[in-house]
Image (cartoon, rainbow, N blue to C red; front, side, top):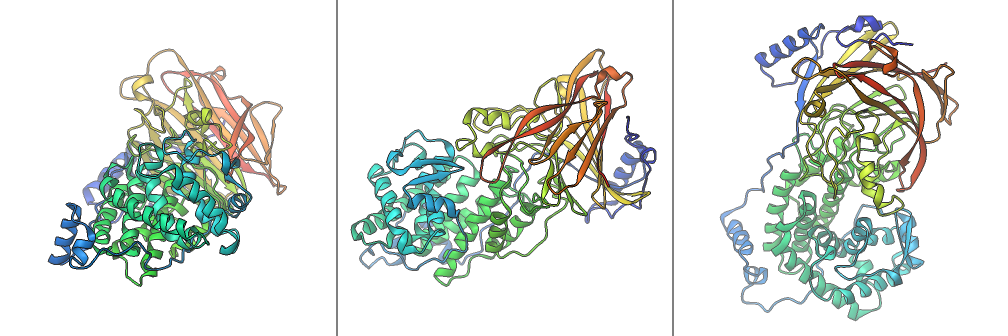
Length: 628
């Protein structure tokens, strides 16, 4: 069954264009004319042709203006003059103490806190007895355990599981062991800027738990260690492994300036560095340059904790930090499915609705998701009970990527509380129940619901979460269509990731009806530049099916039915617009996996359409429709 869906000829699919939406505000008449010319060359009327997606560049945010005296203090502190000398040069140095108690609005994972009270860490489903954990600075732990153990993110979990009096003994046990293994700064994961920044910030925010027990000697040790750590960060924060790590370091420096004695020079120094670093992390539309929703969540959480520190000392934080927090939340919501949980993009797993909702509530930002995050690159269409998410931008630059994925032109689709089409996700959780050995595979193009040529990634996937060459530009065209049943949203995008190797561009067209019951798709391979080469090349169209779906192939192997737990059924049908049917079109079923909200790999299936196609190009059409 070949679906009548050809690029540039929507009438063949029973679709007619509506009047085009207004062009992006601020664009010139000349640019609008170029858009009309481009659309005319495709055979259709004008619409909203978005700027081509390219690798993100940072926005420009500047530190708040200061008077001459404050600028001089900040400069002197940056040059190494001690804060006590600048604040009170004729007074004895103050003893280490906290100036206020912070009331954090962020909640942790209760199950992880209960596990700590029972004597072990619980990280993405893996238990590790506290007595067996090596706290040494150069200890070999998996990345997710390094973050929890050395970043002290477990303090938030412990604070969320029971009254403070019942948790202080568990906190003191881990603190004593860590301080004994780390008497002074050293090399290794324990003293990476990002882990050190998280550790100091968590010590300060959760001080009643970390220092509120009966062990007075340990309390003094923690206070002295906090002061030493703040001084270490002052000197080493610029050596962070990436922009997000620098945000953690600068946030901790600013918090220490607020909560430790003689901290005003440090606060001025920290605020300037933090705002500058945020400008290097965040694009103009609020998306972080790694394009990872997990990193987006971390940046929001750091600013929420820091704002709580300002409130604790009854100070107003710089307006730029409020503005940046307001900018960060809408892009995160753009990647939330109809069940309220997160999509699986750039290493993220399906983070739960409760965790997303709790973070947004703690931020105090009341907003709606951005349906079209132009620079961050994710297109969102909410139609009826369905939500479509589409990656229509290049992957992040290697220097920004933590768990970079070759996911260009992949999509996810959910209906109500269930997911129909997903990506595998979960590379950021490797080291928990997700084995580290499959982390690189989870970042590959084949782990996403898109087209793969010759079993090659559209962008090279390297070790340590980095990416190589591949997709450099993505062109996007989003518009509204009229159908016999109403209206629909059409998104057309193409990428050049296979152009250099195979001389082909991949173009994907997605059309979702506004009642959310039908998604039409077409994947085209188009010669790049010169006439297409002769011969054939292998291709595979992969559709990873969501958890809980009952997948059954049709008798003619040209489609399948997907039964969802709520009793609804969706039908998938495929066809090809090639010169011969031996180029593919039949659907096969293969095993796959999907990483859930707790970081657990769940066995799922995937529908695969594969075969050989002409190196001169080809077209593959498909339909996903709710029955009844």
